Image (tube, rainbow over all chains, first blue to last red):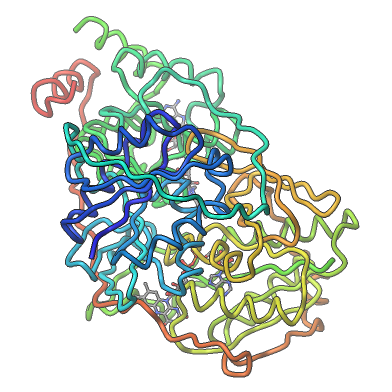
Length: 311
Length: 249
Ligand SMILES: Cc1cc2nc3c(=O)[nH]c(=O)nc-3n(C[C@H](O)[C@H](O)[C@H](O)COP(=O)(O)OP(=O)(O)OC[C@H]3O[C@@H](n4cnc5c(N)ncnc54)[C@H](O)[C@@H]3O)c2cc1C
Ligand SMILES: Cc1cc2nc3c(=O)[nH]c(=O)nc-3n(C[C@H](O)[C@H](O)[C@H](O)COP(=O)(O)OP(=O)(O)OC[C@H]3O[C@@H](n4cnc5c(N)ncnc54)[C@H](O)[C@@H]3O)c2cc1C
């Protein structure tokens, strides 16, 4: 039986992490379909069809799908699901919102944030903020799985799957979208950036984050933060890296004024190279850092920025 | 309206987690247990609703072993009115917890259920959404702000790109995110008072709920360890290493 990947998108293209979800799906079964539900989402459906490994794209149109309300999307997925062995979503804020609703309506369990597909019914997932790895096996007929995008390679483009229309499900009428307050940034998106510059309470103010923005821009990096920096209002909530924020695994992660609490490490310790800048040489962040430098960030960051500029 | 909040007993977030030598799970013997931090936020939000006259009664729910009474007592000491414990020593997975919650909702008829967005032990992030599905209710997940007015709830949600505002019909299930509020501490007099508040103890069977796990845990292992690297003295040295050794800039 085939696997259905449910794709989040912005109307024009599916989210970058859909390509990771497709790769995970191909490890469950070779026949992979993608559902694109939206309002005016022709382009997004085409972008899904271009992902290699995708055999078919199902495209459902309805005004109710414009903003990804779980109450409206879930019944559509539930109607399609019986034809599939698995329903897969990326574990982002859309997947986390929608997938459990689908699972409960189907009366099946969900495997959250799988990082490895061991076999079509067995998955590895982190628990306790990544301090333990559980291998779980599902006996359900339809397996609902959210996958952690950073653990699966992105499927390449260049494919040309057929796009097939499918009917919308009746709107639930339980919820309405009012508006979004999205952080505007020209910087690469945190979860897919090759380099991430991240700041913590050590920055001491939102104003001081400008210093990190300059460094990030010189490096072409995304900008992240610890929970403490978000709670203090230095930066918006979508910057938070960690157990209860975003999980990143860039080639280079630079932690600045971050102590390295277990909840923060959960979101970044799979980064290829980790740099820590902290004035406290005992800070736990140094235990995971490839390169640590002990000192005052207000002196080190400008120096580093200058060095990058000169290169 | 009544507000039902779920409070889960979890290993305290400050405890260093140890995987059991036989790989069946993590060490829980003699380990400090606390209320899941997201559930403290759920209790706080419900209490604020009561203080504003929006809620008539706050009921704290927990499912698990008899020690979950302590977790419920903590909620009662914060100010919740009474507790419901579904007592079982069996492993509970999110779908089972959602079904138990639904059975209690059917009985208590709350106008709102508030649960944490995720429990910091199993990190599933499922229970609230599953409960909403089972009840056919709307869901306001990852709530950063909650406003109740005229039979609906305005929810500001923490999403990937920032914040999103939705309006949902009541009754509804809300799941809490970190910035929804700052939970209060229980005062000593309130801790004393909480001892007299009632906790109803129910059995899954009596509620007619099948809690059999759907996922089988085959093994639990240590994650790969990351080795600490080196300390560099100067920025120039750091830059050189990043460029020539790691090759990342
Ligand atoms: C339920 C729950 C969920 C959580 N989820 C997350 C999460 O997803 N992500 C997350 O990050 N945290 C999370 N936390 C919080 C976590 O436990 C820590 O409190 C948080 O990560 C600390 O942030 P910090 O390192 O910025 O601050 P601190 O721990 O205060 O560290 C600041 C660091 O800056 C250094 N510093 C200060 N001034 C300077 C200077 N001038 N130069 C150099 N260094 C300096 C200090 O030495 C210190 O090490 C969670 C906590 C709970 C309870
Ligand atoms: C290897 C392993 C072995 C386990 N063995 C056992 C066991 O023997 N016995 C056992 O009880 N558990 C056991 N668990 C834990 C159990 O599997 C989880 O509690 C369950 O999967 C729920 O996941 P979650 O709490 O992460 O759900 P989430 O969906 O992340 O929880 C979200 C919210 O739902 C509410 N909630 C969830 N569970 C409860 C609850 N029980 N009571 C009140 N509110 C709740 C809370 O408000 C919580 O914030 C085990 C877990 C693992 C990984």
